[in-house]
Length: 106
Image 1 (cartoon, one colour):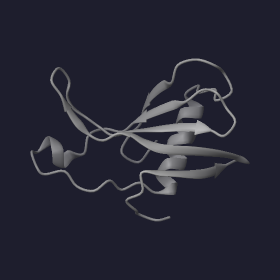
Image 2 (cartoon, one colour):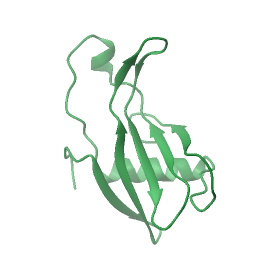
Image 3 (tube, one colour):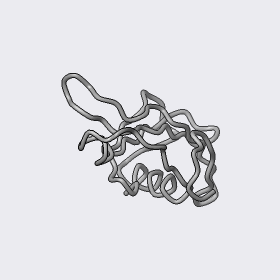
């Protein structure tokens, strides 16, 4: 699945399947300015969700119109690995955990 406009999907990493969906598109917040898109990640048969927030696209910061979202399996995979490395435990219980990544998902 290279460069697509999908907002939902699944990827396999190290024998586990992770489902993802677009949680929030880039938007402007009154108190924080532009916020980037957020995707929701959950391992199948797990309990705890992770939200991964990307930085706002530079075109929005410059006042240009919104473009299409460009999510691919490689970016999603890097985001999952980054969340796991930062301490996300999919099998634990609790509220979703928020992680910030760069534009490439690292």
